[in-house]
Structures are given as C-alpha cells and as structure tokens.
Amino acid sequence: MSEHKIKIAPSVLAADFARLGEQTGEVEKVAAAYGVDRLHIDVMDGMFVPNISFGIPVIKSLAKVAQLPLETHLMIDAPERYLEAFVAAGSRSLLVHVEGAHHLHRTVQQIKGLGVKAGVVLNPATPASALEEILGDVDLVLLMTVNPGFGGQEFIRSTLPKIERVRMMIHEHNIGCELEVDGGIDSATAPLVVSAGANVLVAGSAVFGAKDGIEAALKHLATAADAAE
Ligand code: DX5
Ligand code: ZN
Image 1 (cartoon, rainbow, N blue to C red):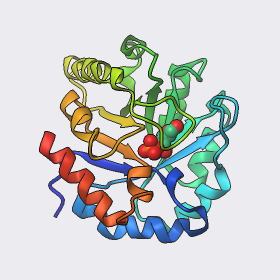
Image 2 (cartoon, rainbow, N blue to C red):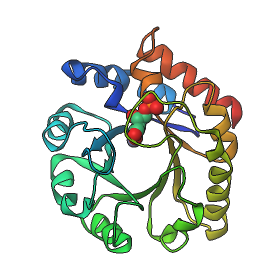
Image 3 (spheres, protein in one colour):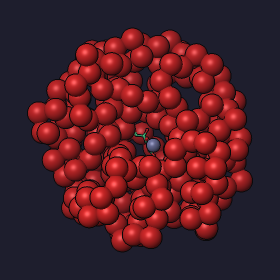
Image 4 (cartoon, rainbow, N blue to C red):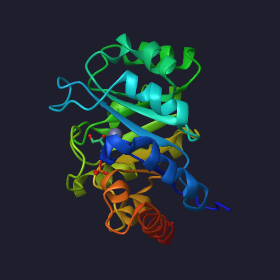
C-alpha cells in the first residue's frame, strides 16, 4: 500500500505523554498508508540542549507497545555513556550529534556493535564537511533544520543548501545512507527539504499537534512530500 519514497518519522516529543501509547497507536494504524516507518524519540539532558525531555524508562514502556521501530535522537552530552542502556530499552537506531561526541568514530562503531543502526546529527551551524570522514560508516545522517531543544520552532531556511550538499556527498560516495531532516517540518516546508534531497522527514507538532487529527496530518505531510519528489 505504501509507495511513498519519502519516509515520515513522527516525533513523540509533541505527543500528550499521558496518552503516549494511544497516540502512537493512532499513528501506527495508518503508518503504512503514509510512509511512516519509525517513531522518532527525542532525549534531552538539559546540558547539551537547554531543555529536558524524558529518558530510558519512557522508551522502555513505549517499546513494549510500539509496532514501529524506535529511532532515538540523543541530545545529551557524552552519549557514549548510555548507548547500551538505550538499546536495552528498545531503541532500534541511535542518532548522536557530531558536536556532542568527542570520539565520534568510536561511538558510531559502538552503536553498530550493539546491533542497531547508527546515525550522526548536525546542528544548523555545523558544516556539511564535518561528515566527510564518517559518512561511509553511518546508516543515516540527520540534519537539524532548527536548533535542537524544543518542538514547534520555525524552520531555518539557510539549512537548505546544506541538505543539497549532503545529498551530493552521499551520491558521490555511492552509499545507501538515509538523509533525514528534523525541525519545523510541515506541509509547507516538506516540499523544500525533499527537493533539496531529504528522504526522511521528522515531524512533531505537524503530526501530534494538528487540529484536524493525526491521520489528516500524516496525509497532508505525505501528499506535500510526494508532490515534490
Ligand atoms: C528538536 C527535536 C525535534 C522536534 C521537532 O530538538 O529534535 O525532533 O521534536 O519538532 P517539530 O516538528 O515540532 O519542529
Ligand atoms: Zn529529533
């Protein structure tokens, strides 16, 4: 049923945490129809970013009920301290910031050694060139299109040329790595990032905060993304 080339990763940061299982269940019911192939989980420590979200126990509970794989975006200092714990909790991929991992190559190898997918994340001001020596080792690159720390922020347009550059680098290296974007993605910005080369879209507020409900929101987003392909 899903012919969508563009994947959507709903970010549960924008969900109602008192109804987390119910809301992710709502996403999962219609996931296949709109190219939703994972749930995006934002972990924040109040140090790497100026906000605290939730951690291991919440992921553990969600993993028990979730059908879709959990992708965990670690916005924490020295993430290497917690890789095992996040995998044990049920994460199927771990995304670490190049700005927060002192020994990025080692951290990426550790993640892969735990049997899950490894991704690296770049903040808006971090240049694409920071990926050069690690690109061949990762399953996914996540480009932040807002400064990390909060949902519901405005998309930063100056990240578009970087998305194009990274798409080119992936092409030149001839690797099958995914190119995901995160922050301020809705049906207005989705076509821009897809045209620039993104193939996975994280969306929090546009999915869980939508006035007309989760299914309508996913439909709008998938339609907007597909129109730009
Ligand atoms: C921001 C997080 C995002 C956030 C996106 O630091 O990494 O995943 O949930 O939220 P929206 O889609 O509302 O910008
Ligand atoms: Zn995120």
